[in-house]
Image (cartoon, rainbow, N blue to C red; front, top):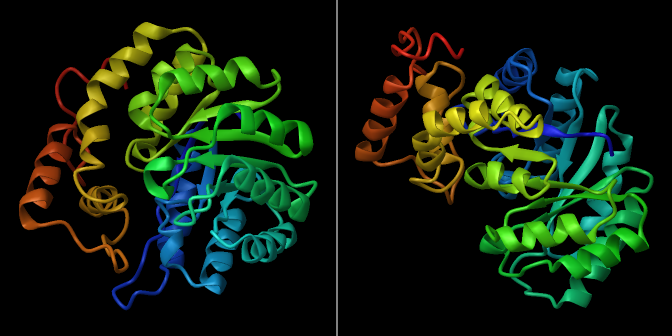
Length: 308
């Protein structure tokens, strides 16, 4: 896998009736690419994949791949806690032109052992071969951690397991992955607030939530860090740290959809069991977005012109 840099875990816009807003999704993809983002992840956690019917999921992946039109790599999220179901669903991705990798999280709820996770991801890799697989370790949502030694076993057992999105929040674990895995294996931070620290110990990039709102700035931050331009990277992180934190004032992607709505980019509809933010949280998000110059027609705050 050659992909590095900043990828956007893109939201899935919904209409008022709950259906996928195809026009809004395609517009978001185009804006992301025009803003210089390095790759796009369709139907991840931020894309509310867990609430999509299987046909909707496949349709959303197709929309993103078609809109990207080969301009940037597209990863398709595909996660299930039943291995047989995952294998069946993932195999459908091989039919979609433009999908360059599959992103799959730990099996949730079952709490499998390391051996169970090994067998689960190995079955996935075999079902989509030769399509590359990016493992997604997110124990805060799934209840299990994928240990670096298990990742190494998987990389050795299946040549198409080529990357990991690491969201354990543990910098020593990220460092272990970088040290244990072959040089060609890519390690991506799955947390915006851990991105620079992760790159500092050898990670290759970020799968970002905040890039939905600020693709130019997040892309510049990650590319600066990868180029050892730490002064620029730290300045960008400092400027947008409050937004990165605010995106988790409520369950992801509720805040980021609210901000995108305030920016005039898409609706803020989410699917149950997610619900809209409270009026107080929305007001805080609007105030912050205004201070950062993100609101539709909002002026750029003083001091930002020199950097952007």
